[in-house]
Length: 451
Image (cartoon, rainbow, N blue to C red; front, side, top):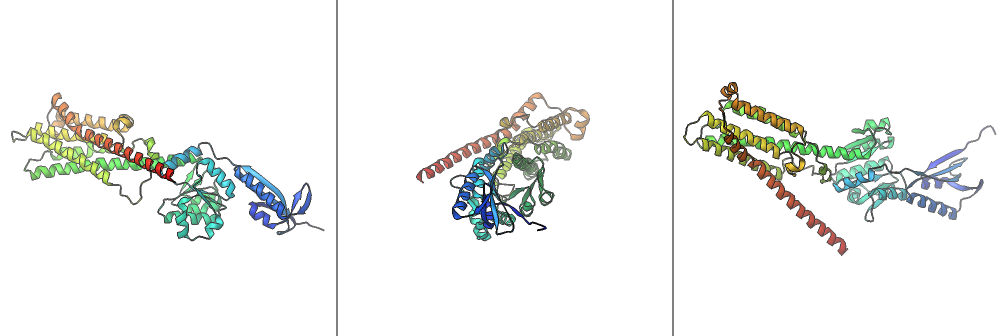
């Protein structure tokens, strides 16, 4: 014979064993009887339950007449810190699903180590997914923690079923067989170090260090940015509404204009600008990752945020009008009257910006100086206001006059009310949230005991 053809096969045990008619025992080829198949099956199950990735090996002259050579167990442990990251993400409301080509035993063993799989969890195979349509799969997907023996088409079907439930799906992958699923996901995340070029092209972002904890950091940063946008919107809207309402009410009440054109420009451009911009770089609160994800259909202007905006606006308007009315007792507008009103509004702005740094936590909890940009912005704004009040050339431009120390102390005491009231509202909301959490945890415990 001039040539010999030998086929070698490796892969999932269930697939390889189908093509085998014999097995190798100490160098001898023996018929593969049912008893031997059951023994290999038990060994494969035992290895998989230990968390090993099991490969079956076979060789022979042609497919259908292969000799089973044995099983190989490969240990591929989860990276350090993954379990902690998974626990934190699950606590924050992120549902994590494992999709793998490994056997059920291996997949469940690894998922259990990571805290993804419990007694109440389900695991389904690629074959079971084939038997379900999208609607049926959408109904059971929320309960399934592990998908095993999954191929690229199964991954795509899983993603579509999750999206069908209204979920925002992020998919991670590193191989060519992940490319289709990465493209279909709302956020495709490719591995930067081990990922293939095809995988990276299909993804929306690349995880440079291949560390699952980085995903948690990205979610944390995203939530922080969204919260900062809310802080910015709250400050800007409350200030703008207050300014418009102040001018409108003064006109309706037949009061002279409490602020002149230059003062309004100064408030909108110089006073509002730097503090508002600094709210956008507020450091991310470490507790934000533990908060449940928001509903995508919810507007950024939630009922809670609108209430805070209106409360702040009302306090600013009432306080400023009170100062204006107090100074206008002689019914003659003087530079002192407008200076007091002008400075009152500016100080209200600064305290409003301070209370807008967080929607839930007290300014003392997050730290008065934790956002250095905010400190510089407020300090610069106050220095600018003092120059407008006490620097003669600017006094002429803005039609102001010097105020006494007692005037400034009076204004500081009055304008701090917007911050105090907002802090009281936050305290009330935190207390209400704690009561609700205790109530829900008690309900969960009772339900568990009843079962």
